[in-house]
Amino acid sequence: VIPPDIRCAQDYEFAAQRIMAEPSYAYVAGGSGRDLTVAANLAAFAQWSVYPRVLRDVSDGHTRLKLGQQTFLHPILLAPVAFQKLAHPAGEIDTARAACAMDACMVCSTLSSCLLEDVAHAAGPHKWFQLYFQANRDDTRNLLARAEAAGFGAIVVTLDASIQVPSARALQAGFRMPPDCVAVNLQATNAGETIELAPDDSRIFQGAMRAAPTWSDLTWLMAETSLPVWVKGVLHPDDALALKAAGVAGIVVSNHGGRSLDGAPASLTVLPAIRAVVGDEYPLLLDGGIRSGADIFKVLALGANAVLVGRLQMYALSVAGALGVAHMIKLLREELEICMAQAGCATLAEINSNALLRSL
Ligand code: FNR
Picture 1: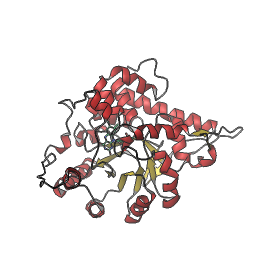
Picture 2: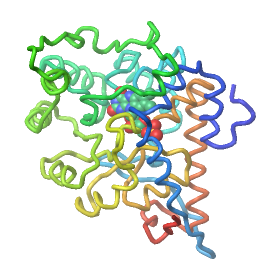
Picture 3: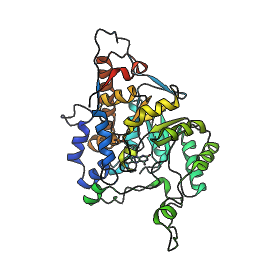
Picture 4: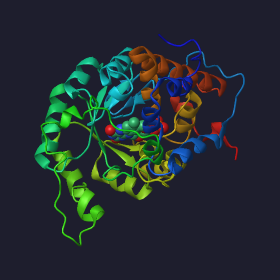
């Protein structure tokens, strides 16, 4: 059941803090290192106010949009979030059901704790697969083939997490991944193979980064699949420009919710510069720090076509399973519609930076 004190999407964050085991909450909420970028993501939204407008007729308003070949009823996607059994025993299956009920696109993580085939089955027509390059090309090819066979409509390859610093907050809370939270999609792969290092080798360069993808791997990937390939984890305009030139279908501006480079800029902060270099028509999504419909409005005003929400889905899942995730999406969508109506914007296309005022 949905607790009666959930009145807005962010209330799920506060409710989850009460409901989830402390170490699990710390793992989900925390970023890498000291949470500098987690804080930056949230603070970036506070720097903008939304101008209300009067007397505009929004009675034909809607939130529909087209992304690639697909039409969506609203611009809210579920970001790839690993190990969802941490939040609820049904894990990603419940999230997929909620996405289906609410016409949201779910992006299923390579590291999901349910089989990607089962997630695809539970999800609606809008489902994408988030790919992590595996150390071995056969393993990557195999994951791709499974995602295609399961009916996922796009590949979202995440490039900002080849190496991650543990969260100080999760470590302090004594977090350990519970035994039922397993990357079941990788069980038949060589993931976890240990690498032999020479005495002078760096644990980072010759160790963790040895198998990290480079530009040639991206080219290989795009030739390997017939699905559109999106790239997630881009913050620098030069990278965005080069990715567009390489032919990727679209870019997810993201700092992995502050879980990758601690000290990276907020996604929202770099969005205008990225939109400026890729041009008006190129598909851009953004995630990081979204907690309300007004946050979504700000993202759209600063140049993205749609958003992904990460932590909020884990929080809602932990509070009320599929019902919670569906309710959270409904609340976010209504909050966005309220903000649009008050700002005098009847469609997503009408939302632009003229609607915002820099307030700090
Ligand atoms: C993530 N994220 C993530 N991204 C990805 O590409 N693959 C993954 O497996 C995961 N796993 C994951 C687990 C957890 C617990 C979190 C919180 C995040 C990052 C995610 O897709 C997204 O970029 C951020 O969560 C967005 O920020 P917010 O909405 O959480 O502030």
